[in-house]
Length: 201
Image (tube, rainbow, N blue to C red; front, side, top):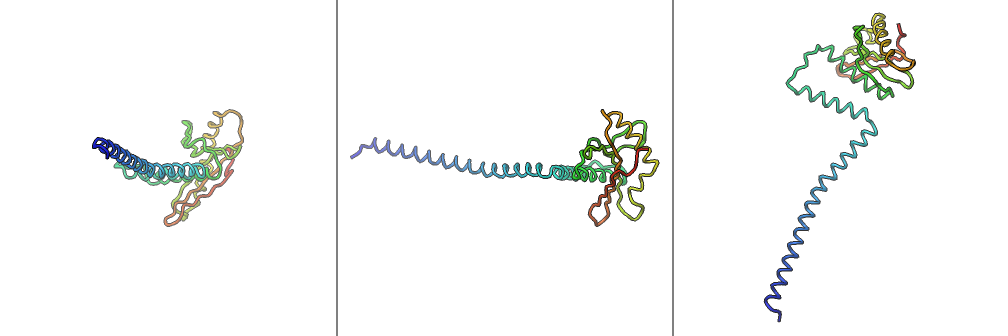
């Protein structure tokens, strides 16, 4: 017959094993719950990276649109006239459209102190440097948007383009493109690109 002290040692070692098992179960639960958080985060990160690789422009565009929408919730009011806000939206749509067409945009809203005009977008289409004028309309009821780039506007854009070219090294081939953006009520945004729309004047 075992002594009482032997039984006590056995019971205490059993209690220690039970406590250890309980701790392991608790640790397992903690690890499981953290894994439950970690796995979706890893999946989400992988999903975002896949989006970046597959359609980097589209993701950036969605982020910018989200930020623009969030900005409308702020108390600060945009005091710009409606036609200027429409023009900014058109330039943003044109920017992402051109990126999807393979253009590499290197400048936006390039200004010169010698002219009242600005170059809305400047970018490379392959080896061709493009000066891009963006025209935005909310209706097609009047003349097409691109008609607004009349001879006087073309001369202004040519002056700014010459100044831009003087800042570049080398003598790249270049052209002027016009992109028309239409935001018509109840319709999807429509974009038309006119390459080599007019010569340097």
